[in-house]
Image (cartoon, rainbow, N blue to C red; front, side):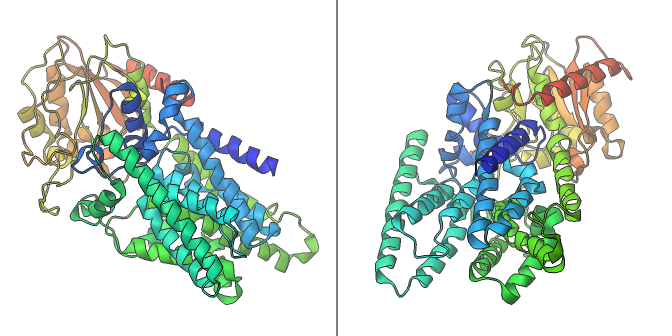
Length: 560
């Protein structure tokens, strides 16, 4: 209905524009930063874009290029919020088709109040767009019939776009395609139509992807193949490995959050007396998690497209409980009960991750953005790689050519042993004070020249891991943990203070599991002839942080 669409659109756009925290580097470096560089001519490209061969398609970042061209003030977040609303609308429609109208609003409510949707769905992550496209495609899937052309063509088209953006989405659609073929095995006419539509759609999608990526990279390239081959190699394990049960013991519980008990009851009910198509959804979830569990590198967001399916299953148990045990209430919408307050707890945790957890990593960029070019002459980030947004948010054209740098984390592209290979970030944290003494000049040049080689060129296969050469910038940005006395932070503080740096901004960041990212974010500025003095910039810190917080509340209209 119209109200369903309006509520979802308003809520998700509000969700998107209110989000001012850091979740995953890919939110920026695999989407907005690439689009920004294409439109404005400057920005950072990670190794996935510069390696030979590259493994990322320009299709996903291209979604945001028109927004940068036309709506530079509103920014891509509003666009992403509109895409996210498709998931909520689609979840309701999917529940209506599979379970019936009685369950539709329950699934809709679970989707709107979802903790993980509030955390990730409105971010510019390819997994988030994949989730919306998958949910929309499932709404066109022929659950109750053979499916006429006008129905299966949109489903195959949306599935193809999802696979173009995230090649691993094919895991979901391989299962559904096989199930549909098996269901239609005795109907030759329908089987012919299914294979014809699928082959035409796959051929068109592959040709289109080959064309746009070849135009972007300037040579024939088919990125999905490169993506799969790279992720099946040892490079994938370089970014961390998790045990086989990760998605069962961490992934699903975190994604489902407060609705986990209802999903567990729904699974039990489906296994006992569930309708056929509900069992198909359950089998799809099991199949996808099983395949992903064989891969070494695992992340919560990889199974995000399964979340709408879990809400359909959860909605049945949620509604059936009221009708089974409280039949005299004649409840039109069983959500208006004591369970409403419990389910809203997921929304409270969602607000925390939207507004507070990791907020300093975005606030610091907004603070730097507020500085005039005459003040912000150059900037260096002494923190784990890709810990903050970049030029897509900063938008400082004068900070190019080594005047804006961060520690790198290039993978072992030359075939090094990933178990012993150490990237620049790891080398820095072995002994930060030694890194500063060995890779920086003894004194600060007040002209703040560009650093010759602040990090390894992304995508290069150089094995020279200790050849980085920096120049001192006007501003240094790092996590407070760098100054931890237990890890030698007092030596770093004295070293930077002796060079003339002092703190001018600090922001809190909430709980952080990685010790390197604890202690909030700090900005130290070089001031001519000034030695480090205790509490010398306390007032400036308070004012600067408050100003950047004000900017973040107006986010994302302040992106440009």
